[in-house]
Length: 297
Image (tube, rainbow, N blue to C red; front, side, top):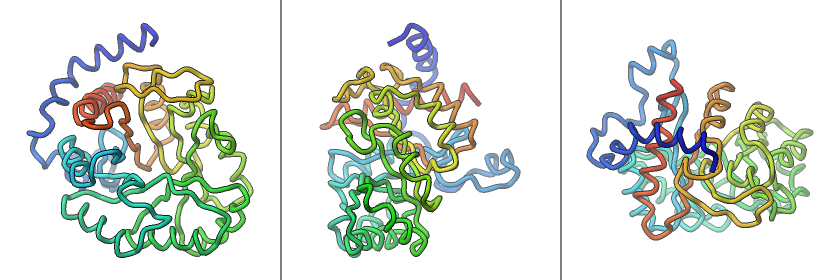
């Protein structure tokens, strides 16, 4: 971890840490799915979307806890956009009824089913249609996925039919197909613009690529971002998750790049360090992230 990054983290946490600890007790009006009138005024009356904070829309990925426990934690950290992990709902194998049941549960909690993943898409029209029908059943705006290269021509046809955006997720050096966002970018250039990217910043770092640079260069097809921090170095084939700001990720540079391109998708936070009880680390990480966004604003 660089000295500059350490100092930035310390300064940000002066104002963010207390808020992170007390998140469950804050007024729910602060995290309503509807943008505030002040935010609308600042944006010239334009609706910026649910979960908008200091220039970006924030979300959280559910991970290893039960769906009910995940919902409780997401509500406690004042997030409304949810990426539902495949252990809670798998679009490849789940039924429309199961998708609707999960969506109803999220809606009842005041949350929005923004995406799921990562969904594998083989070169099989029936299987792809099943995933797409499940996504349609919950009005999912973006499907975070990993298609085989041979499936891209078929996906080109189906994204037009379903009017669904695909965000292909990069997975670092151990991924033989999409190690970095640039590999996704090259693969999709000849296909419909609805086929784009989900940039995972930790895997991007391990692939030896600068995330802020890829955000700027791939902006026209950037439909999702997975934000996290890691102690892993470039070339590592295993991630080492840590709280945001304590690792090697250039959080400030990434946020500046997202703000610069006026990114309108969701920045999905993935906290993967503590699998059994992620609430405290997630709250700390989001507190750091929100503090830095406030500073940049």
